[in-house]
Image (cartoon, protein in one colour):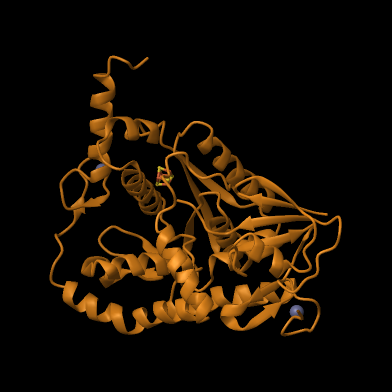
Amino acid sequence: MKCRKCKTPAEVALPSHNTAFCRDCFSVYFTGQVEKAIRRHGLINPGERVLVALSGGKDSLGLMLELSRLGYDVTGLHVDLGIPKSSSAARAKVEGFCAAHGLTLRVVELEKEGLPIPDVKRYINRPVCSACGKIKRHWFNRVALEEGFEVLATGHNLDDEVARLFANTLRWDAGYLSDQGPCLNAESGFARKIKPLYRLSEFETACYAFLNGIEIHTAPCPYSGGASFTGHKRLWADLEYKSPGSKIAFYDGFLKRGRPAFAQVEKETGAPLAPCEKCGSPTSTGLCGVCRLAIAVSERRAADPDRD
Amino acid sequence: MITVFVEPDNETHAFERHNTVLMLQKRLGLRVNDALVIRGAELLTPDCRLNDGDMIRIRKVMSTG
Ligand code: SF4
Ligand SMILES: [Zn+2]
Ligand SMILES: [Zn+2]
């Protein structure tokens, strides 16, 4: 296979775009897709400071590298979940990456915040991943606000977004359908949330990480009972295979024609938000969900006779 | 003989011979964009020919969690 642009041997075949690229031209293509996302949805304005959520996976680290190369003012944020072995390995990859590229990194340690995920799993009677996701989002938002970042960027790719949109559509979840997308504007105490990789597939972000020599954390979390949305991703891989371009068409079509309709319906509803009494994060319940979790964990930990 | 190491499963397979990357991917039940196919420092496209003695790394791309 030859590169579509320069005719040297290709390294990346992209049936979805009916094309193939050598590594240099793939890099140009990748950057172009990120710039297009930023431009089309006004993701980052000149001079804004961007906090990038770094898990240690290919998507978040690739996003950080690409945004820094584009000249944006980026700072990484890693939440150390406190899961034995797994969390220290992920954190080491993030720290190594930021050190190698001279990028600024902030780390939040849930152990220090009284909410290590193993304790959440042990003492809170709800699926650990839903609590964990909530805690991570809370800290990303909180650091963004407390330290004056206008924008919070995450590495969600096209496959993540399509799988999530598909799940929301199967449930006709009007609340989620009203605001899913690459840009969620800042409001009532939340920074603007952006997903600059939404036009790029998981395969493309994996190629980017490999071609840029990024060492990634690949071991799955010991608490993940299989990845979320894997079944839906499979279905979409089949669709994409039979009909290349389906994923971006579905997603772009939703942004253009679906979301505005749902946003209209949802406008009137929604409880008013006020700062959490303890941590200041926006909430509709006095004490925010994460502060309530922290109290529940510490009470049950104190009452646990098996605790050393 | 071609040696194939699959990530993140960390399994090693040895195949007598496979002419192309596409044939190897089919054998492993993978579509073109399901995994990176790595030989040394380069990525291989499906039409690439495999040679006797090749060490190939297959890196599945579907993210977990
Ligand atoms: S899989 Fe692990 S890291 Fe991911 S949400 Fe669940 S507990 Fe948290
Ligand atoms: Zn080229
Ligand atoms: Zn709070």
